[in-house]
Image (cartoon, rainbow, N blue to C red; front, top):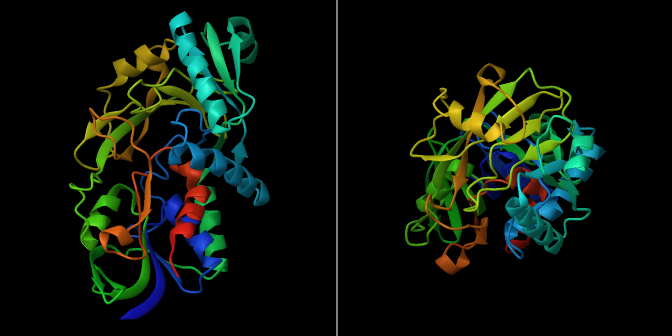
Length: 366
């Protein structure tokens, strides 16, 4: 049985960022991932947006880690020439009632430390995006987009340079805490003994917590799968900013928005609905919902949009529940020293990855 210092479960963007952070401080860091490559789920099935931090409650981890994480992420992609674009975002309002929502978002963003927010009128909005229909818009200059695959690949490379060892096709099937060490068993029969375990297992992070002996129902750490689909349009061109409606008041998602990729192609989504299993299949069941939402801010018809992709958010928030923050916690209080859970790391997890890694590093006990 191999003995190691730190075992990180999950090689999504957060697990890789944690590996990079910890391998700079510890000699024996291993990442295990059940898939055959990094970021096969939430980390690669998203809008690839670098978020600003305006949406999240003041004082929340999502707010703090998003604002700080965006700074770190921009610095990283610039340093290593990873494709990105600081394109900015417009959150649009259709009427005076939605204008009040923009004002509240602006105030919340400023309290969270987001700079240069500005509410603009219809004329100014048209000058920025002539195709967009909006009476008002909140201009968010710090928002951007990034090539998430190349980002993760570079974090993987830098982690390995620092001494991290990343192993794929390693699915965890049990975790036993014995004499201050964690005996982790994999489906292939291998076992590792680790002094510390960092749970970055994304969609399955609650199951990993359960394996070690945490009652996820009692601790309210059970994850709920929320699926989102995307449509793409080859007809709409020459869009420079991301365009968002006012967000869902329940905080489940940010509304069906318009994003661009680094090739300038336009996609719409995601929508949001809760599901019981991880399944990325798509059909056109929700196309009318998309058309209705999109036509509020840009004119499209049925033939203008086509199925693109889907993703699943690992949410602590129940379908009828209230906002839930990231759960990032060392679990000594529950009897598991140096077992650190990262659960419910949905959006803005990509933006926050380096800040999450720093938060995890602070919680590792000597």
